[in-house]
Image (tube, rainbow, N blue to C red; front, side, top):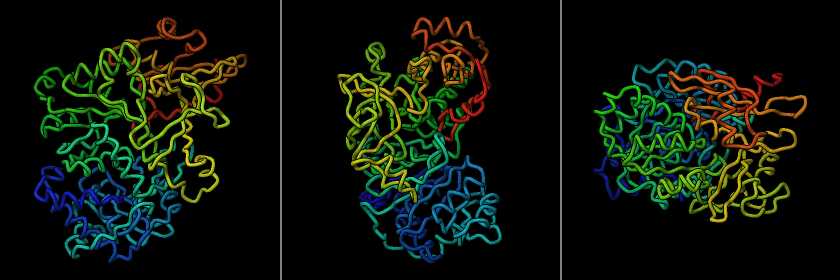
Length: 519
């Protein structure tokens, strides 16, 4: 398997089909392939050799798609930059990976130039913006215009395709090494599960530096569909883009879904004008979606089938899929909609105890997975690689259990589990109860120090527009749904939660803030 394989196929089989539509401009597969081959030639002319790392520091764009194809075409290795990081974090990732070329857009040309100047190995900065090329940088478009198409270097299989730095939700970023087989095999799972399909028109609004979006990108290439990149997320723009481009599918984080639904509620006139009936599949991921939020979403998009993906960067990223067949009233009533689904077609999973022994169905433990999507390892971190990869299995650090019918249910990150008075409290279970409260829009549950119980359950809540709540109301609501020892002992109301770039709540930041907090 190789990253550019699907592009080659579409260049041959559907050269005149629309590959990309972005900001009023459209490219066919023949045009996209030509630009990719010429950009790859430009990179080689700059001295990029096989296995050299090339970074992209940019918002979503059509050029980002070209980067994802041109770098492997040139035989090099991808290293997308997290746009939410500080300059110090970016500098760390570029130095750690030994990146030699950095591509920047208009939004990050200034900070990109400063970071590049401090990097040990960066030789060239390529400007992929719309204005005049800054001094000391190389024009992206000139590289394409001035070079003849390069023959694909055809690196494949276990060859390194990219280094993807983790988002830092559980500590300082690590470079996850993924191969061509890792990335392509993982993307195939959506086609096998029929949550993606030939001829799709896919909104790509999750940050393109993140593997969740790259997985979508690879799936669209495999399907020969049309890419509809969006520079960044706003609820109005996404909804209007679905209607304007007759988009068939989109991947959203639950936090994005909340904002989209709130916008529809707050703008009923404009919402009534939008024809969203083209949307066939609405995928969600990055974090669980509560049953109450799912009900709101299904009511707002009655024509769409819903699908959830659970995964992690180290698995390229897909582990399980919960397809549209589980998003109905029956599965809402019997609880199956709360699961994260079954192992994807190319994945095998087990739930194990601390010694690595598989536990009985219904018993919580750590989720481990294996298959062609398992990472090669962590860049320059052999000890952490050995800890995560054991006998071919990826130890995810996620807690969960498998039901008798084979569906997998998440409990929590192992590190997020709260131990209060000797009892294990899974924050995800408490958060699910909180999200059914009519005033709660978003929430996060953490353990905070308690002199008697060791840890106490603490809830951080963002209320819905115009709503309010307090500790008494929250506790009364939870008492009907969960055991007493799981009920929050304290509640904090905020305007927003600290979030990663893909909508994950940064509980590590919340725990830091509450390290000395006492109930």
